[in-house]
Image (cartoon, rainbow, N blue to C red; front, top):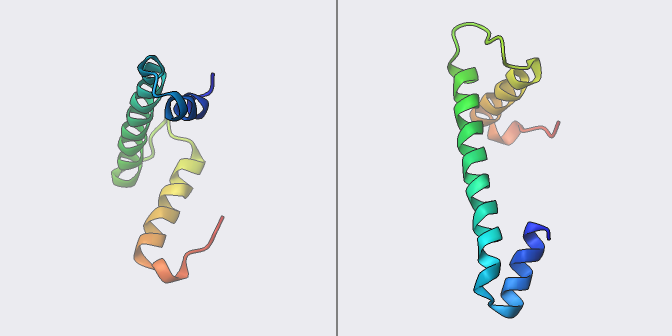
Length: 77
């Protein structure tokens, strides 16, 4: 069962047994966001290129920084 399906099923039935899958999905989301934040922080603050970082990661970090400095000039990539 997909995670969104589990949520909608729970909303309809209020069956507490369905909450385990929803909580697990949310737990994994939080872990993923924490990992992504740590990775982006390493890239943005790096003094040298990291060997395990992909070139596109540096480009995405540069776009993030540029967009934060010039929010009115943001472009969609």
